[in-house]
Length: 48
Image 1 (cartoon, rainbow, N blue to C red):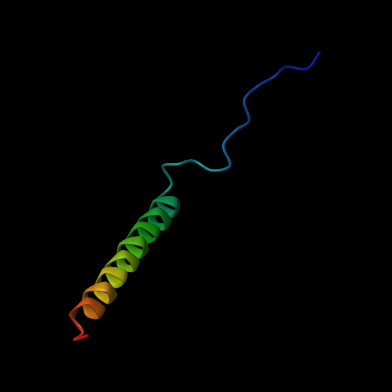
Image 2: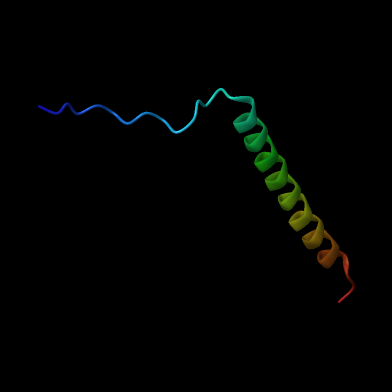
């Protein structure tokens, strides 16, 4: 008879590699948002 168990996670969420990847993604997102805001600020400052 088979048992129904929850599947094991692929990796431990407390591993330092995954934390580093998550931190890199957060920093990349913040950098992207900063770039977009900077572009909007630059274009808004142009004389029309």
